[in-house]
Length: 201
Image (cartoon, rainbow, N blue to C red; front, side, top):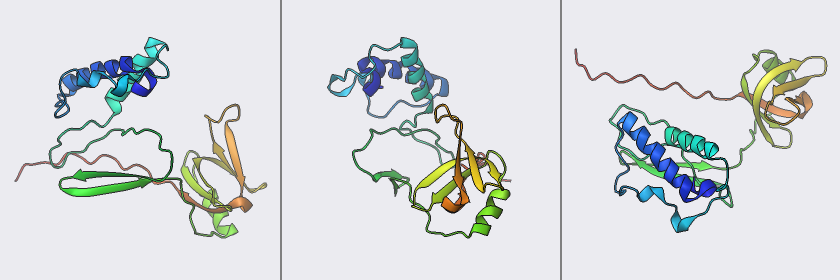
């Protein structure tokens, strides 16, 4: 919000976050004085400081609702939210954290292609078995990685079609079987675990 809207954005986010905390009865961020989160470091002006206030409001609401704020969680509960960071100048980026005394680290970088080389017949069978809308990950012959929603497989042309509604005027994209090294279903995000009962019977 500081990057986009400057102090105005920080103030909006603080207001939305406090309202969210009131609704969800979350504790406030430890060690943060009241109002301290309403200003940006070094008084950033923001790239969209003169934009439509409704967009700023909508962005503040989204960030307040979806962000993963620092908080204490009881054993057996889960935290669900987004973590934001400035775009790095180089990749990979390593994020480290401590959870219950254990150190966790995750490395984010460009996608790496699979080294598996599937036979032509294996690829054909794989795509014939897919359902429309399935999320797939392809590794192309030159190592490039593509992720998309499967649309259909054209057996005559031996082309795989994907739905790409956000790619501009065209809403589909295809790859020839000959240009695909391997294909795999994209792992689905697991469902949140059910609450753990503390009753002892």
